[in-house]
Image (cartoon, rainbow, N blue to C red; front, top):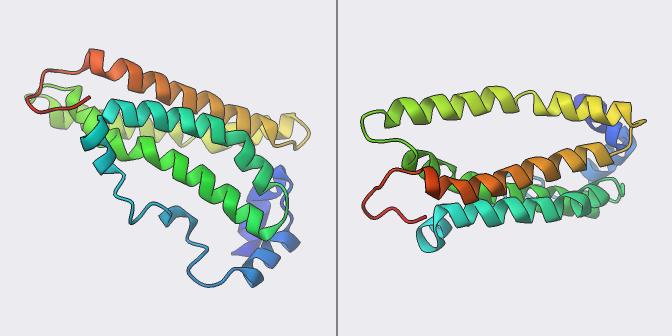
Length: 178
């Protein structure tokens, strides 16, 4: 597995030796970077503050955290790599947590299931090309990490803008909190 991951992250300056060091030094259970928000129940933030605000501030937080995350990841120090990945994943999890609620509010009951399904699957198809785009941008910049960070900032700001626009486009649902 390290070989496949090594090829994937070599463009941002992380070597296979550094990955092997991380694998040796990280204790079991602490490398589950994608589960950093598992117990946080971030969807509750939408209930309390409004889903649009969670998306807005999550997008802004992700944009602010992008460059520091990449700096930590490319440091090559195992603890800093983990901290950078955790920071990036945690900030990206905020807008994702409120995604379903916002999509539900965009469609009337008669077309809601189709609308949400179509929007979610279209977003999945389009976003599937983001890693390819980031890889191409990094390669065009002589294997420097900044284009990938700039892409993350741009997408995060787009997300924040969507959080601002969504309430104006939503249908009137009783009890729905933007």
